[in-house]
Image (cartoon, rainbow, N blue to C red; front, side):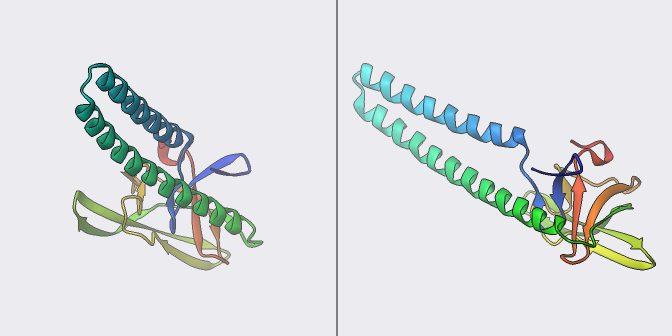
Length: 175
């Protein structure tokens, strides 16, 4: 998680949400939990002289562990890329803080429901800016699982050089 003047940046309009410390702890705990289950299944199956059952359950747990580990590695790499891009945007000499009310820009149907795009319009020195979330995945336009409140303003950083909106933690009461 990247900090700017003591405030954490946890969401960008282009790259989505950064992983929080809690997200990382949950993924590591899940990996450890699956590993403990694998060991228990193998040991108790071996002690019960049911080797076929133990090997079968061990292999199923191993496959689950591999899938869970690959998902965790994918999200951690994506998070590192997001943090790297945020740090690059923070080097912009024209970086400024702005306030705007986000609004729902677009809505599409996905397998589990709807995905939303959000947009903000704001002005700085007589120049009008409009920024839209660029992805339709589950994080695009969604702030920690919720849509932005349409009535409340958010304070964010904007980098004109990179065209990136970076939202601070605890905006609109979300953590």
